[in-house]
Length: 258
Length: 331
Ligand SMILES: Nc1ncnc2c1ncn2[C@@H]1O[C@H](COP(=O)(O)OP(=O)(O)OP(=O)(O)O)[C@@H](O)[C@H]1O
Ligand SMILES: [Mg+2]
Image (cartoon, rainbow over all chains, first blue to last red; front, top):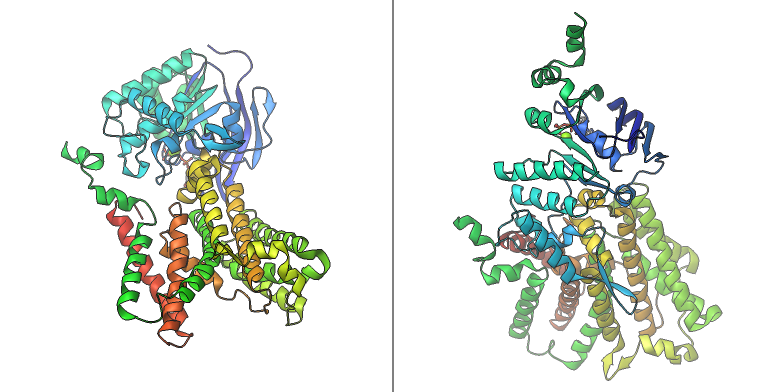
């Protein structure tokens, strides 16, 4: 399931927002070919942790190693170039741009005329149309529509389709099934499993505990900015898992000691 | 079911048209010309007035296009009038030492530096552009006063006749040269904005900087690009103005920051960022300058002009907001 050297290694990571201590000495390893469920209460620090991994926040203290190399500069561009693709929780699409423009934002295909890079509109439109159709958007949504006009589920679909299209080594999904219908949810979860089987590292944040208990190889639980549990999924029953999230790590550990 | 279909299938064509920025400006210009024609029989439709309007509207349009780029990136540049003045004064003052070509380059370097310093303060210092460029407005004007001691020389005869001076000032085919330069800049910048990766990232940065950043867009560099382009355009406008009339004084370009903002906003740039049009900004410049000449033609005291710009600006903001909402934008 996992090679011996982790693809991403996080050691003693601290992150402060001003005086607020959002991540407290978090250490965790992620391996290629692994499906890791990241769970925990609202405000536990899940999104903050993955935002460090995808380069949005630089840690206040601690280290991140990617593929054995220490990460010294944090920027989404660098993370994307390393092959980390992320479906962000609340952001990731610019309302004022069309689906096609959003799709390729930051990695626009160009045709050079006299050496000047012009957007390759045909490619942008064709490819993004193909992807949104594959992901089940109806024919009345065109790649030229501004994202502003889309429903919550349609937006989420565009974000997922884009991330899967550009998948590379790591796919981070922050509550990817929000806004999605039951059918679409299943589709996304199947895809996540497929990508893992193709050798990608999949980090999957969700509040759907029973779902993630079925899908994940390993489950990491966070609370108040700390990692309180890190376990193989089959080493813990769904009930235990729910109990840890509800009551926090320490109480359950006490139970184990009896 | 029906709700789904209204979006693309049944959205009335006119509403779809209105989604493009700059439509308000076109409506405005038509209304203005009709009004001018109705209320005024002597002053407006004359060759002299039209050629003046064309010349000064082209110069203001250069500034307004730069301002539009900055506003699209969700910032503002209050310093363009002073950058215009400082570049113009550099062009005139350095001509004796550097020649016309050298002075032009010096003026553009000065403009670039003005833009760069302010852009760095905004993106690296995390300061609001409103404050930084307000500082620029005073600081660059102050430099003009200190440097020139209050008076600026004009060009000697041979500099006036220099081919570069004539190329940027003067006339081509009986039309002010400034007009052709403005059209060239409009064509190039429109392509940059709508058909290049930089343009896509500029629109994205202005529309939603956080989302753009998560896609790997270097929003700080994009904003710096907008500020520097804006300052360079202000510098170009200064050069074009003085190539036509190579004498000036230290107040050159005062209040142009307001006129350029007015032109960009009348042209459909939303201060909420991410939406705007360069064609609109050019039309906006045409409207602002036309009002000045119409007031002159009507014999109104020139001080009324600022009041009028203010009123037109407010009407434009209200109208464009309404238009944007009506067309279905979340603004
Ligand atoms: N940019 C920020 N500035 C200040 N505080 C922040 C910022 N982002 C997050 N926080 C705080 O950090 C804490 C962790 O937030 P985070 O978004 O990581 O939680 P989460 O585990 O993803 O929760 P949810 O399940 O609700 O998405 C919260 O208390 C939040 O208020
Ligand atoms: Mg979250």
